[in-house]
Image (cartoon, rainbow, N blue to C red; front, side, top):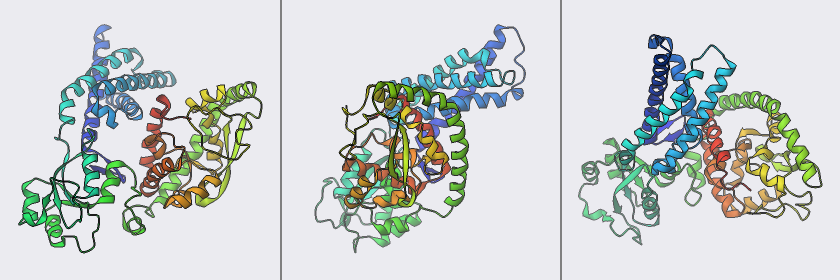
Length: 461
């Protein structure tokens, strides 16, 4: 994997993305050449239009990222990728048409949009037909050796067996574990020189999956492996990188303290984040005011009670604030106190189900962002009662309040709607990853991926 602004991107995804971007530039140029030939004009030198060519390609490329073209399912299924590609190209073309409307005469896209769309679909689908077998094989996977043969090694095997996995386990080495779960593991005593063994297998990374590391680490072997240029990683850090979450079953306070993350450089990042929040919330509130007003009236007519729902939530450093949303439930939905939402919750009104599906009920929260109580990106704020209960049940739950809560977040785009303590535990693993590795780049990725969640509601309640 390649680490970009503290966020890991698989080599296969990065290579495929860069190739797609280059092909989109080619598609835009082909569309321009075809249109110029049709109307009998000189297309002119490439140097005169390279900026709009790259600009148009970037717009479509960002649309591809936002709808999940580079997600695990898209890399695994050509049919899934094709459907997402068509949606992404359509969204990109609509965005380009809007830009051409705002900046008339500054671009050449309007007369070539249909051709650009057709060429983009053609080259991107052909690209995946040619590379699908390679991406799905071990060609781009890192070769990993696992030290250990217990439950942790078994978890790594299950993770590596996934089609979208970015690594392949080439061998397991059984150390001094009392129980061997991975039967094919090779006993350490059977290997004369572990460093030479790793070198002969072409291993690029060694992962320590020992249940008990005290007096069990082969330090001389690990030092020899490290000096040969092979990366050595512990189990929790490896899982964090591969899954995009902090594994609560294996981490401890010392790992959180000494591992990379929670850097002091976030002061500048926080300033950038706040400037963006203010600017974006002003624009969004201005544009969405008619939509909020319209649905506020519909909510009012649909059921008795106020149009807006206000509820106390826990924010930064545990401070409480009042969250504002369009009301989607009956006015007396919480007469017996706050409770988890459930699938097909009978408390949800007719119009409420619609605005929840499209996330329209979230729009008034932009006011909380403007006031500085929330951000556009961050962990979802919970009600104080839930927080008190969850802090007793789940370790490190309070650490999620070290960053400002958000409308969308890393957990929201990676995990379906949670309505139980176990779901909250899973979401916390993603929230801790975000708090630990926060950068403006990660915020940008989350904002793009939120489009996918809106277009394909996953677990909305």
